[in-house]
Image 1 (tube, rainbow, N blue to C red):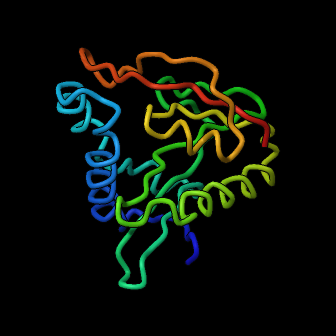
Image 2: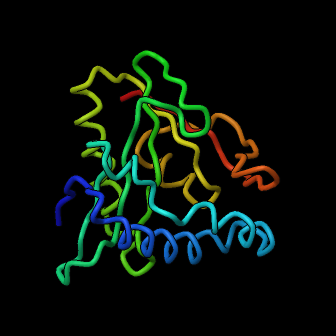
Length: 164
């Protein structure tokens, strides 16, 4: 398997992947009420990420999108930029394909591209269920916080950070 750059034409497939992955994989770490409020805001593919040139997808042999993820210079919530810092964004693996190294494949693709762009640190706003993934690729847990997902929706999350 290999990671390829995402395109706007992947929007429907990435949205379906996010819905399947987040609904299933986040259920063990979040209350149903929290997920019911948060998921509608989280499972839509972001067109600007898809067109960024720094967002990747992996397809199964049957050509369905089974994983995605990428990075941006801008912070997800505020769009602020800090020199040499990039933000890992919208990582997801379909529940049928977890623990096979596909997320790491995308992470390493991000790592190579970020290094080439002069990035020296990664930051991730991690869902609670993904903390072990980010720790496994070398990011350290910094703190927990409530990630705002709109006017009244907040998702408990973890800030993770590491050297590139």
